[in-house]
Amino acid sequence: MEFTFLSRPEELSTLLSTWTALGITSVAMDFEEESNLHCYGEHVCTIQLYDKKHYYIVDAIELAKSEAGISAMKALLEGPLEKVMFACQSDAALARKALDIQLKNIFDVRVIAIELGFNGNLTALIERNLGIKTEDGSKKKKYQTANWMKRPIPEQQIEYALSDVQYLFDLKDSLVKEMESTLTKSQQGKVAHEMKTCAVQKRPERPGWEKICNCKLLNAEERIYIKHFFLARDGLARKANVPASRILDKHLIVAMAKKGTWEGILAEDKMCYESVFEKARLDAEAEIRK
Image (tube, rainbow, N blue to C red; front, top):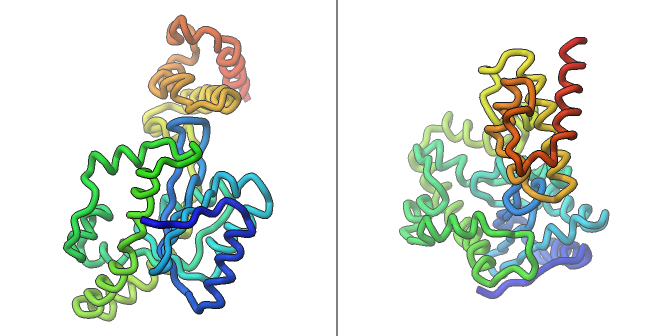
């Protein structure tokens, strides 16, 4: 599959200008990301684009290094160009968190699919509506968990990434036709409303320590401990640029919060973090006393 690799702000800006000049108002789009699997933090790694004729890989990692690069991505992601996607919510959340960019003008084919009673993944939807069998699940999982931060990107990973935008236009046409022939006006109105809000944040982002366990099962003091132990682990991971789980498993953070101390929980090979977690314990106790 032939494609153009864009890694400089002016390259992406020129592409957007070219599309405008050609009257192209809609492109298929998808992201590949890194989310605390191979390094610290969450990152938009690539943006895959397809304009019905040509494929593009946008190097979001490189572009994010400069204000000009962020500005170019903002022009794409927040601009008037329609972006056809599948299940945009996680990509939209990542763009907000990693790039401070809000996805706009999204046509999410999954919105229609759900109203039609379909709740499967993109592979299943392509087979359902287009009769095309694509990658098997195990192979797809392999590339989903690949290290997308590495450059150059292996050819097979790029083929996988582009395959996720390859059929989005065909899916859009098929699903719109099915919607118009089977859904009521009321249901179509619901789809239109959902389409306008599908990329918008529905509720405030929860802090990370509330996500590593069911905080409702912890008492007030335990919730304070888990916050401080989580932040201590996060600081260590950020400094070392490794996933936080490599510093300490989340289940141990929960155990420390329930016990109110790191003592008796940190393994011998983790005792190098003793002073950091001791400070976190003291900070938690200070907050509890307030």
